[in-house]
Image 1 (cartoon, helix red, strand yellow):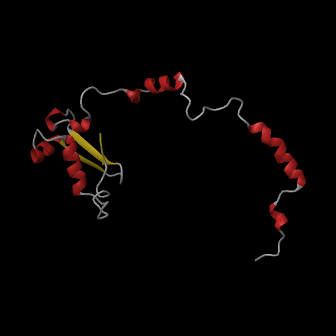
Image 2: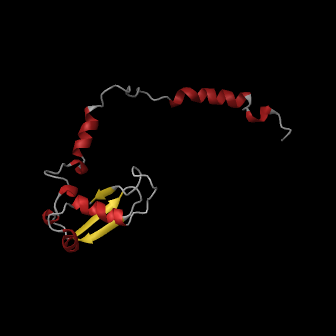
Image 3: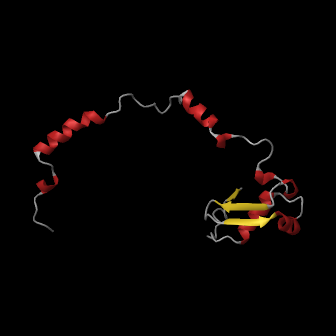
Length: 131
C-alpha cells in the first residue's frame, strides 16, 4: 500500500477546464441513423456494385457432382481450424465415384483428419468452406 493521497489521480482544475472546453468540439455535425431507420440507398447500391456480390446461377459449388466440376484441383477449407485440404478431381472420382456430391466428399475429407474433437456430437468436426 502507498501513502499517496487520492488526489494524485484527479486532474488539477486547470486541466479540468481544458478538458471541458474540448468536449463540445468532437461532436459529429450530423446525427447518425436510428436503429430502426432504413439504410440510405447509396449503401445498398455500393453493395450491389461490389464484384463479390455476383450471384451464381444454379447450384452452389458444394452441391455439384464431381463429374460436373470443371476444376481439376478441388479444395475444401475449414472455417474452424483454418486447415485446407486439396485433392485432384481424378483421385476424388476414383475414391468416391463420379456421381458423388463435392459437398459430401469435402466433408468426409475434413472429418477424416479433424483435430477438433470434444466428445460432444454438436461441437465435433470441422466447418467446411468449398472453394
